[in-house]
Length: 167
Image 1: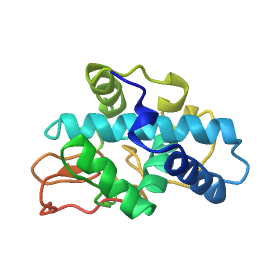
Image 2: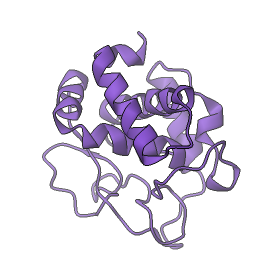
Image 3: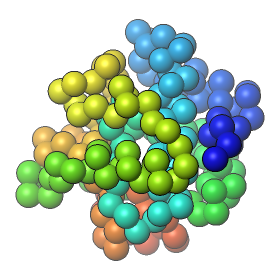
């Protein structure tokens, strides 16, 4: 597949990178670019496979949040991808925790034709860089939880009629 960064204009990509930097000023520009690139891969995979239960890592979720804050850019991105990828906040809980969510997500991104920056897909206890986003597949309160096809959690494609929240 082509370079995922080509899904955005250079100015659009730079704006999202700047948002990551604004939210996390200790993150270098190079790291913010990596984070946004992985978020684009996640959104592209979520659009391509809307019924598969996936979730971003905490670090990648920071990039997804930054993308979403650029609402016009995010809408155009989703249009290019063929479907809108919603983000529904949900409070994680141990009963819903899926220990295989990140592994499944990485595999799906690869199936979508992208290589992953594996350092940014680590479990929260092993992250390369700390970020403010606290959404992921973890069972602790304060995050988004995994994608829940049919009930919708972290991402959902379609008309936005999902039942879950998403952070």
